[in-house]
Image (cartoon, rainbow, N blue to C red; front, side, top):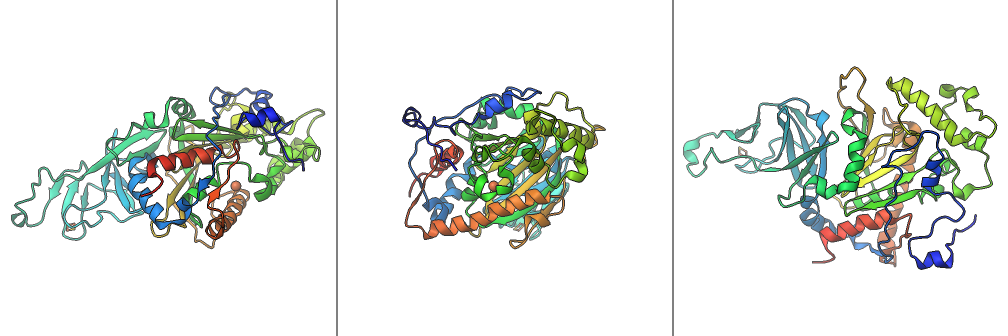
Length: 470
Ligand code: FES
Ligand SMILES: [Fe+2]
């Protein structure tokens, strides 16, 4: 295998080198028959330095504590989808570390989030992991209760609490904003608005996706065996595809994927599919790519559709095939949807812990939260989204399938087994990485200037919130 080395001039302009001799992601997309929209056809890379990333952030309990003080209370976080709380009185408990919130719909157009703690002696008003519908939040301990709007409803034996004014003893709130069907919260009253936090460029992308018109058809939760930041970073680059996921590397432009950063809190990659990895140039034909791409799907696709016409490309054939399959499956017209949106992996990170995949073929959301009991573990969830059916009736969001630490993702009901196998491969690496970092003589991680820019961008934001020491 040729080791890609930039020219001298490229190496001088640090971060400017790309895999030599391979088309860029934009060049691949520009050759497609159905052209891509503006949010696809743009680049936003920035060189952000090349120093090592310190590893105490992954290994020290004290660092995790600082994150709970300095990072989590000041960032916008995805607490639930609006579809989890469609009716007035619906509520959903969202936890981040020791923090816990009751997210509830108090009116048709108003969602609030309350600190999930009784104002008497602190008992959680609703158990973590629960949701439901109610007209009041009543404490199980001594029965103090609050109305949906947060005003106090009842206080047992008020004669004993002349120092408590029921009229003002309201449940404290945190900020709530809604975007694309997601309910975001922020504990910091001085934090920027969600739109300012995301920034205008990325906001324009998000608005185009219309994720509010999707529903959760599969939701899988599992702990990952590494610090939450390592778990997140494992999904930020396609550099690992060749060695970690060899089964997909033939059909993926891994080494010529595109990486972008937007302001302080958003980054993305575009990883084109249906094209040969530059690592494999000269080893496979277009028909081989097609065969590899459709492996395991022969019953659904049929042999005739899998044979490429003379001069045809696997990418175009796959895009055409996907278009037909998805139109049939979702009873929608995808005529205006580009080939890139149908085929490619678009992965956006909203700092600190959300990945949005707005593509058509695998629309997903990842959420990563630190396990509050052990900084070496991550609470990971994947939510698969589908368009709301044309009749407009929104199905109930899928209940989470919770896997044990020992279970394979392939055992999760509703998840594509091939995709589950990929997540298992990532999980196996995470065990080795967490343990290796703890065992290492080296106290830093070394990153590629381009392919690992999302990790540097992410860790730079972590540094900004958490600080280095003290
Ligand atoms: S702790 Fe809630 S009513 Fe006493
Ligand atoms: Fe992976």
